[in-house]
Amino acid sequence: MLLNKSFSLNHCTSVKMMKKLNQYLLENYPLVWNMRLLSVLAVCTLLHLVHFVIGFFTFSTIEGMSYHNPEGMFFDSPFALFSIIGSFIVFILWLIKVLRNNAFKSFYPFSKIQLFAQFLIFFLVALFNITYYFSYTYGYVVSARLHTDIVANTKDNEVLQNVLPFLQGKDSYDIQNRCTPYPFPMNKRFKNEAINDPNNPDKVILPKGYSDNSDHYYIGSDKRIYSPKQLDSIAGGATFSYLNYCSYRYRYNYDSYESQKEELIQKMHKQLKVQPEAIRASMSAFLQVCDKYKIKYKLSVDDWFKWVYHPPYFPVTYTIQNTYYYPQTDAEDAVNEVAVPTPANSEKELNPKGYFVQVDRLECILDNTFKVHEYHIKWNILLVFMYFAMAIALTLFSFRASSKRIWLISLIGSALVCLAVGAITAVLNYGKGNTGSMVLLFYLLLILAFLLVAIISHKKTIAGVTLNWFVWSAPAILPIIYGIYSARYRYIQSQVPAYQYTKPHLLDWIDNHTEVFMSLCILLSFISMLFLSSRYRRWQAMPED
Image (tube, rainbow, N blue to C red):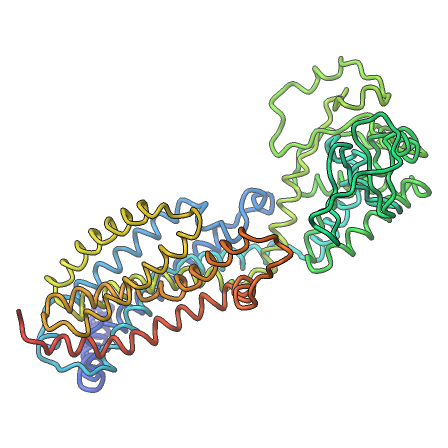
């Protein structure tokens, strides 16, 4: 009985507080009250918290990180569909409250600033209601950080890097891949292939003093020409050798990739030549790492080391199967294969004992662990959501600022205009010659024509429809101008030799600062809406047709 009375008292107190809050907003901030801003933000905040909690408990084991990276975890989970549906439900329930007829909308005089404020509210709510992805992802990231150790992950990655040269396919050990010592790396050329002179693009240089009967040759870093026989002599007859491996994928510091790559290659060469026991220790440590992360493998350190250590040229006679999943074929059948470890059979990737390691899966686990600890909200991803929110806000604002009839005519008319523009584009044969820039210029002039008609027309229907069209098209103005500039550059570039025409500085800057450019497009959209809010206010004052 006492509990019921306490509950009733608390309920009555909450209702009174809500009434007082609504009364205060109605008297002091009528637009916030009418747009139900606090209510919808409260609901969205609760949903963001729910997404964070679900994302937090989605993380199960470190081994599961081999299948999902943190940025794609949300879209890989079945919960994404429910999240999208929930977002739609929030929009629908909120819009029912906001867009229905009421005395405030019908009789309250909106100023230009208030109309612009409506647009900002639509944008804010739309952005808040479609970004549950970030809350879910961050919940997953926080949980993963609690279960993983970045220091141990870095050490495990170093162990993997030490044995990667001995876990590749045969093509990775081809002598064409070799990058050290000097005069490597070498560039393979064919005898009938012309070489452009960098000092004179119209002149070609053919190899001179070359007497080998092969159809190809090599150009070393010392600019000398080497025949295949000379190259075989340098490699000791081992066309496929562990010394030729030069494809490290160092994941943890992309800015210093080349320096890390060179360091690892020199370390591997030194161990092969003078520290063979270090290689055996690395192989043993690698299998321990596989056990740690529950990576499936069938491999013996003794056999692995015997396959690798053949000084002084270290030819590749066998390879180990690198698989992501457990092999479906019976590995024991491979035991009966007869393998002759000679260069004559080096074209076949023979694996007489069916050895395999899930190297790719281990790499994914280590890579995703690193991404979890380095995760932050990327501006380019946020920009994508901002553009979606901008599209939603413009659609809702135009519906709110105009009338249902005008908005419906605008929607149907825009479909017809798109069909007409598509037909014109097909007639102009877009993409050939210089028509690309001409079509984009036509789009730009069409958008500006919408604004001109909206300003000068005395017919309320025509002015309202073209004003809606311009509002929907305005965010595309800067990208279209960029497209015209870029298409014109590509056309000119195709007409003259590349060395006679350099890329314009402005175009080069935009290509290297895409995020800044797209941010400027968003900013321009907000500025244009401040101007267009006054146009809607004037349109509302026009007499009916």
